[in-house]
Image (cartoon, rainbow, N blue to C red; front, side, top):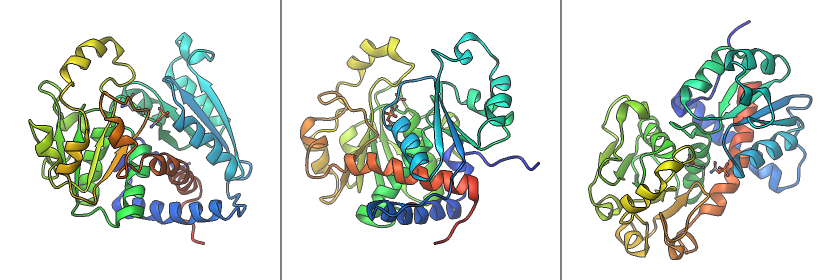
Length: 307
Ligand code: CP
Ligand code: NVA
């Protein structure tokens, strides 16, 4: 049996494969909007394992699998044996014999890699401490929908160099755009942790206004990611000057869009005037999680499909 393909970080797929997934996202979204039934994954089962909280990821995977004709099962650490010390390798063997595809949200990337290496079926990263590749699939699809190709553009990342930031940096290498990152001192990007090949596609700025200048897309995320709650008070102090506000949006291009993976904290990493303002595309961005992940599951389970 050939080992299955997984989607554990964005660079697991080539540029060409990601472009195919975007093309399928467009088609699957159009059918969904036209209320056309599309059930290519009939009789297929997705297992979703959550070791951290979620609204969008759970909903988009569960609804998405149902809309493709399959079914989805939700497991969490609290009420499965995963929370009681069953080895991840054993869980992978068992879960992958009873399902067709698995999505996991967990802590260290190493956990999902160990699971995948013992899985008979494709495994999707639904967020780890290091990466959030499903989010960036949806984000880039959203940018292309709104503004056209992302190649050659500039993305400003303001705030924590977290899982979402790392995935933007991988995307920049794959698609050929620039990421201007501004973090408080002590929170800078670690190229190795981000899984980068080189540093050609990103630049770090001490001043967030400098990072935002001339950007086509300005984006941020919570100051304290899940799993880092113990640092919350310290982070509130350290990140106080890294809020995306109206001045920062004025430094970007006039047609720049604002994105946030959500959930957002208005008054912390983003001002209400920005996330609720005319340049914000956060609701389309959230919706596109659904369409992009349906295309991702179709690709992992059926390979290339054309209309
Ligand atoms: N953006 C995102 O992954 O949201 P959830 O944590 O609600 O899944
Ligand atoms: N960086 C955030 C993203 C939440 C979707 C976290 O990991 O908590």
